[in-house]
Image 1 (cartoon, rainbow, N blue to C red):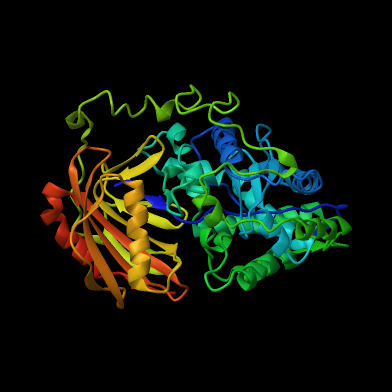
Image 2 (spheres, rainbow, N blue to C red):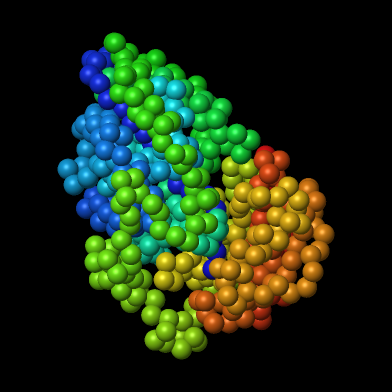
Length: 494
């Protein structure tokens, strides 16, 4: 089944002013993870993804705001400790005209900051903390280190799904495609803590008070509403985050630290005077090109500055999976049978147990568990034939039935062969009232009929929690007892 996922991005922000000297008392040592790829590969993948982002997301294009963000970003990049400096990297900074409290940095240093994050920060120090955290992920090369964990994928294909993980294809609603590119955007708790610690060091080196990095997380929690801002959902809390960042900041003594500047105050005033920015969900639902400040617009698909899917810079979209050139039976792969032993997985708001040999494939707001040979990226879409996907989508309705109707409608729009089979059944999911509905589909990966069961329940935040169970139709009886066992382990913690 082709899957699409909600919401967007990741995070970061701006800064500037004169650096102050620091005295290090007992800073924590940070060690970058092992990475088989060269720094030049980070730049290659990040540049490809950044071109797609700039083509399909609304850039603010205000010279004063962008110039300010760039100055602040350069100041922080120059403060990265020497052992994490990579001459190949190209740290750049663009502002996205979206009101969500969000931002993200791609491999190689290509950083995008949501306007909403600038408006939410209480001072320049907090913004400095957000962007320092993001470029720490870049400097530590966390994106490609995570791609390396998905051993079946070649790095080139990993870039294809990045934009879908951030935004979702325009006109297809909030359920944006879930791809391996999500490895560039959502990090483990271990990597999060490394970025927190290195971010504090970068702030101190640049003359900011690292305590403001901890303060930024508090601001995000306060301004994110009941569901929390996307930046926090994509950056899982390693535990005691506020405390250990403050302890690290205590060990980094910064004299005359920068807390706020006139430039920051001026930029916030400029943004307040601009027309209201759209949310990422509004942007994703829009099928039209995004109007830009100053009358500019994005080029259409024929513009030579942006290659189409057959451009040689993106070979994996055309030649890597030439499904139209081979009969379906040649495309079938051996799929491992589910292990009788289960392992536990702890998400941000749920716990689940899955067969030990099912791999964990995270996206921005969902995670897929599938065996080897049962998943692949086809023309920029993540497709899996055996396994489950668990996630949550923001709903316009507080009614479980209505919210599930909307989800099923989104799924059928993204999968033309997907058909509902029968009426809703009452279920218990995570000890809550839920619904299930059986559906049939033709797999885009194998061309075989498949069975899809959708399970849903409401979260207290108003989001719809979902679980998709997928198997080929001729194997559905063999998988049903596995899916039943997995469903019995689900625990929702919201």
